[in-house]
Length: 400
Image (cartoon, rainbow, N blue to C red):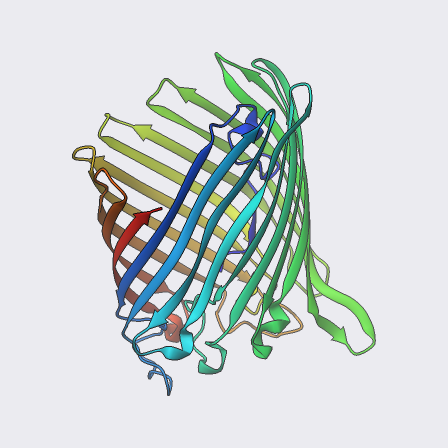
């Protein structure tokens, strides 16, 4: 599971809706029942060199029904929203992995005066852990629970200076006793100031400070200090739309990680991010993203990791109902050990890549469907952690 904070975005704000950026969003109601049937040839994400744990099967078919919602309601100058999904994963062979799957976020977009917009949201997630980082059978069954809260405020007009502030809170817990030592919570404070010009775009200076703690990693009985890290981040961000075809943002900055516990290696270095979309024609669209992030994780037994990720994709519309999609992703992770847990079994670093492609058929009416395939590969100095995985999915969606 990814639990990270951005180190290349403008103050890591949660103001993701158009309204929070200063535009009034149109009302929308999109409620769907979805059903995904997937074949996976390596459900447990384990190396070919390892035997399949007793009581589990390496290949399986997963059936995942869910209800997805995307609702927005303007109320004068304000707005309310709710989006996400609630579902359940059923397995033909790995009954032990069956679990509910909840991912919801809701909140409000506010205008409490002038050209300033505020965004408030809460989030809740609950699901079976992703198995890509676990090869010990005693750790496979685990429910992750995530709670989040965010607030951001931005003041801006069509032209001129644009100040902003933000606050984020995360809390991640595990059900398995063996993994509760990696439960964590964090607080992130951010601020930015930019200058907006219709001709030049927006240039911002941003800074953020995050306090992350593992509350279940006490040094010793009676010693109250907990393990964790403080992350300081600052830099520049530039965003602009070049006509109707090319738009996006890029940022560059500096990040410093200061561990709370003596003996944990610190980190300092460059940070960056890029998020670009290009509509080459009315039919062909593509995107590119890149970022460096500092991660605490409730899955990996370490202090933190520095991740470099890159994603590239494209879609082609044959007509109004049929679209083809393809994408490629690459992630490199560098781990820092926790002195309380000893050397990590995951080694010092790893790399992973994912290739995917599929088609989406959305004719007029309530029913649409999609088929896609993906192939992933993990590469680590620890051979027993390497794996290959192939997944084929067929999805049916029914609009209510």
